[in-house]
Image 1 (spheres, rainbow, N blue to C red):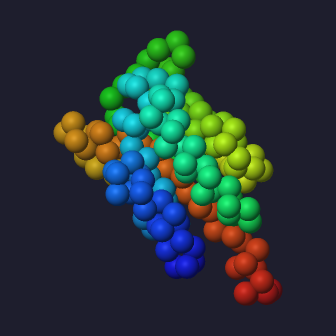
Image 2: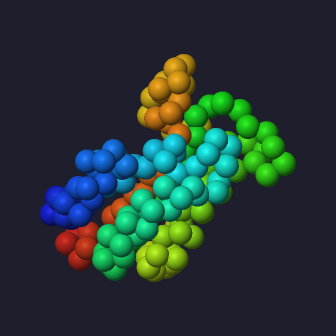
Image 3: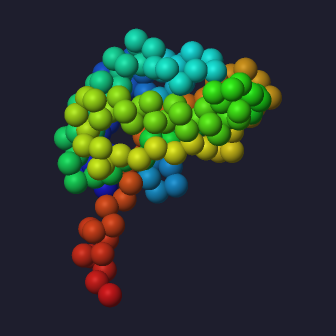
Length: 157
């Protein structure tokens, strides 16, 4: 797992150095974190040009991990939204995650290796009491899911 983490860090170095994404280990999972402000306009699930470029680079790296699956997770701050398209933050976060999934597939990541999930405002990483905290909570995370086949082989029943 450490080897894969180091490999991902190396491949994403230019995007990390440019502040476009970060890579971390959270709750035992490798997480690629993309701030919402480079991907989406407020209240929208349509990817902007800058976000499309960054995600195309991300897709090139993810496509090389053919034996791994990834979950794209959408997160929002706690500011209420209520539009006909997005009655709540859950719908907005799920729509954003699926927009990212579709772009990753269009750029070479096998669809069978991807899933999308919307968490709304329910997994904050910072306080929602400040503008900076809310900005940190509005994010897309791409999580490399554990390869359970490897675990099962190492620990047969």
